Length: 373
Image 1 (cartoon, one colour):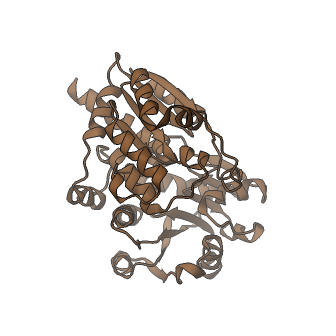
Image 2 (cartoon, one colour; image 1 turned 90 degrees about the vertical axis):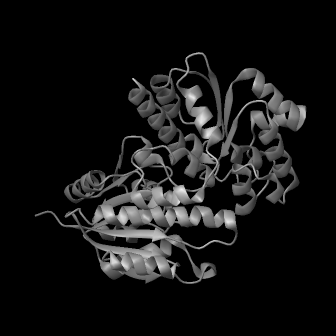
């Protein structure tokens, strides 16, 4: 009988501001759904939950998880933390899941990953090679072969490039690519039928304004509409949009890998839309977008990095929700005000918006069209 996988679920579960709390609580709800789904997977044995949230720890323990309370954040290093837990629990097969990732994964999805990892030695199965949110690998002690990364995004890449392991990337869809990382992700996931009961209950009581998301979905299904998407848009996403939506697209892809390459940290990010913003100003920028499209989807982090900004989570998240009054940075406040007042609906977010978020929106819109038929 193949060995069982040990699940390591990392969910911080703490926040400093109300808007950050919104995302943190959504991640906790999604993590509870994940725990309930993996309990039914015989190929997954021990479940280890690492968190700083005592209330969530108690609920996870009631579901059969072993609890590892995180040290203070100033002492927290993601890779070192995972390596220590892997050493402690000595799994034959390890399955890491970040809080908020895999929110749309089913019990069968997790079973398939655990089975494949157990059957394929010296391999890592991941949702994204270059920006990992969850991964399974065998044997479990492989982390001793690499330097522990600071962020989980680098896990699969390091196992592949530095340990020389086979990397198996999962098919790209909403379930594998969506990671709850910003408030916008809560809007893109709101209409998807695979949302679990805990996350669904949270979204209903959060009373988020989904008006723009609903408008965008209508445009996605309209052959006469044009939608603009800009930022770290992958070639596979462009093909998906072309294949799965009847609307017309304007796609501006730039600065993919700006974090992993170090360009953002070195202040080397350059954006065509950023230069256009500098030339036309806030109002002129969005006036032009309104002439080009019926709706705009913007990975705003590229524009912020072009300006060499390092915004706080409060400013980033408030911008995503178009709450300009809560933003401290003057550029981001002006940008958000102009987006809110633009003549077309504007959707703001990070990389997840133009990756997993788009899969979720398109899949939900497609399901609605089929239901209407």
